[in-house]
Length: 222
Ligand SMILES: Nc1nc2c(ncn2[C@@H]2O[C@H](COP(=O)(O)OP(=O)(O)O)[C@@H](O)[C@H]2O)c(=O)[nH]1
Ligand SMILES: [Mg+2]
Image (cartoon, helix red, strand yellow):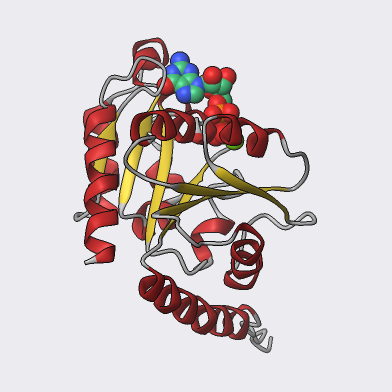
């Protein structure tokens, strides 16, 4: 039997997106605004972490947030109440943001005067990992109820991230979650990554995250 030919139509789309993302990153560098792509499964604690972060840096950083969802605007109102300049992006069913969507969102948001902008990406551990949004840093959250085996199942997300936040540490014991096993599973894929266990609810571990953010913003502007 003839071998079936496989054509990778995905490649061109990704190459065009990479060019747009690179150009956006350069513009944001000139503007001194650090764009951070925050990714995770739905419900792992992105909005809760953003709100706690906004409260912690209120007198030090001006922050913008682009909320991406298939529908609704509840998260945008939530972060706005905590002091962020916010816009809601509806992806029309798409499971991720790409550089063009991100650029459009930034135009609406306006980056003037903002030290950092977070993208709260669509809740999903697969598609957002594939698309460069133009962000300078990629941060993913894994919550303890999701389990320490997730790096084995969704390796790309863990490979592309600069920081893995392990959220909901306050309830880790109820989910047989092992931080040591998670670290081992993550390091297999990404030896350089920063791993930050924390709870946005109790504040445990938040300081290293805030220190990292302040350091990255300062370095981006330098
Ligand atoms: N126990 C605990 N619950 C949390 C923590 N962070 C978030 N949650 C809860 O997890 C649920 C989903 O959080 P949310 O921030 O909306 O997740 P998102 O969908 O990733 O934005 C909410 O009920 C939060 O109160 C945490 O650190 N500890
Ligand atoms: Mg949210």
